[in-house]
Image 1: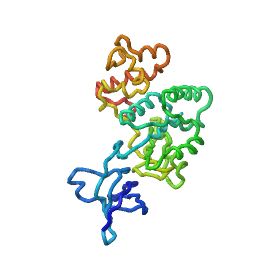
Image 2: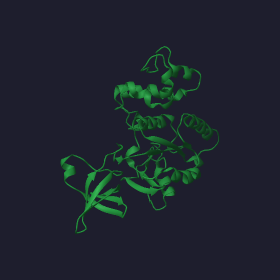
Image 3: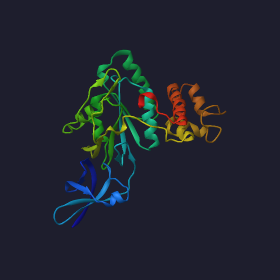
Image 4: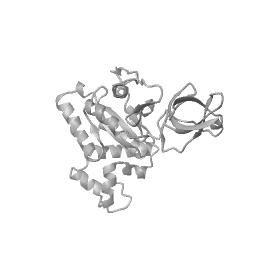
Length: 296
């Protein structure tokens, strides 16, 4: 009987595929996980046991960095957020919901604008102008597919798990198929009436890319901010948090407080008006405990 460590890269029909130094091993989870009400997730670092008959069992989940999404991905290092220019239409409100959610989860985000070939002229120029603001406040932004194809594999470091996220139909699975030629992910058509795509990813799976992994998952197509504490929301807007050190009052909520640096920068045009409007809208969502209509 021997023990080995590895990463859960796939889950199907109750079996866990674990990548070890010796290759991928298909395992079953021991009953002790049910007793402890634990469930291994794709991305978990685990310990497996291989007995003398060649049977393999998952016996231990090693400490997690995080566990996010439904179905969940564990130990997510970075999000590659796919936002479409059109079909479904580009939405700053949706973009901000994703960014605030992942800021709350303490996960870094890189933004990729997909389907730019389907939109030309002033409309595309305006989207790129808006995204330039996000680049300025610290989010890496890609608007060219060829840059993504070349640079993303170079950015995924050893042991890291990058996860695709974005609205259904934004092109996550299509992107994965380009980045990882053997992924063979199913892609879906857009519903004209709903302006969104059908969920085509049914399970979570990790694909080797760069020095780590890239996951495609259906778990991040909608975002619920309601568990965030209302007085902490402002801290997840990165430019608000930076400016708040100059606010007159500690714990400033950037509403009507005197000496608010965020309001000052907003008036000077250094903070995007739409970001501040989204902040106010999210405060309402959280206080009323509701999701915005288009995210349901």
